[in-house]
Length: 409
Image (cartoon, rainbow, N blue to C red; front, top):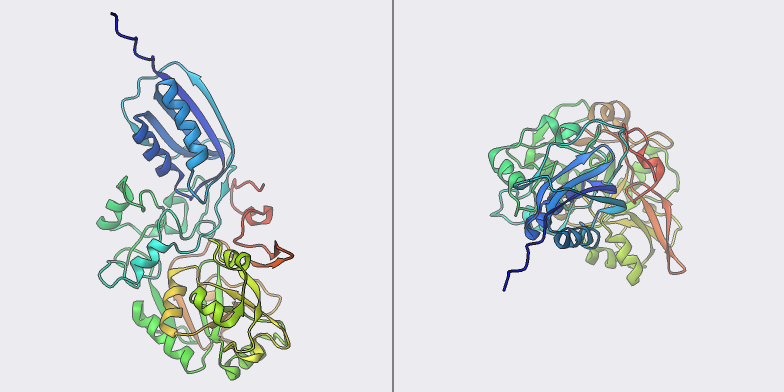
């Protein structure tokens, strides 16, 4: 009996548009192609992600279906176009250098709150990223606030000044590592670092000592300007009535509520009553401020939200915030780093000029912020999510202005 003929190979060209850069899409495609035994390549392009793959028709069909069904959790596919061609004779599957030609028009993910795996890293004493405030992976970290041009590669972001050490480079190139092709990948040996300044810009401490200095300043009632992901926060002890009133006076903010940052959902539940939808919203990867019913027993100064039954509460969304809250030990006011009606400050030298009349200390870092992004504000009303201020929450046309080639929805 003659053996059944082997299926002839086919070559498939795929073009994917949507939020597919900065969300681990190329590593996902690489792993999927490797599992299915495909050859070819994947790359970032100016309009999304381009793929060319070769295998049997059945394997390629499974490949396309799996891209749609198993895509990274922060990805959003708006269109997937494919066509079959004659086999090209690829011998392996690879991630190619990004294509830079063509009209630059693509959607970029919002910045993503620190994932559970990175949290374990920064609070595990034996981990090489222990208490490192700029830890990230393909599932979390800065995206929109650091990108300068397209496509989304490290050299097109404000991380280009930080050359990865050998350990970070191994992670970046390891197919099985969750930091495989994580563009902001860094550690304490090669990445951004903290400093704390006084009002004259003098460096008082660096690295972990800067964090400790900031914690002690907050405990003493000081106002600390903290450079975060998309700009500065002005922070004080949320339980210190005198400190909050002083912040109100210096910021010229008479009665508008201040937002509160709490280290965990357990802390949130001590401050406010919540339902399932509110808990899901406050825990979202975009980490919005959520308006919640305030408990009578909440250990928060009355002047945080005067004569208001609600508190605007958010969870930490960067390792820096997680470390600061955990070391401080109780909630902090985290209001935007500006005077009322002025834009939020993003640069530390500008912060000294504009905020030195408010802040006693400046906890800063040397990763530039390309564009400011304030905290989103949301609430649950009649069982539905209502966005009161959209910033990190995706997607909104205004969030993509000012990035060369980034297209709003």
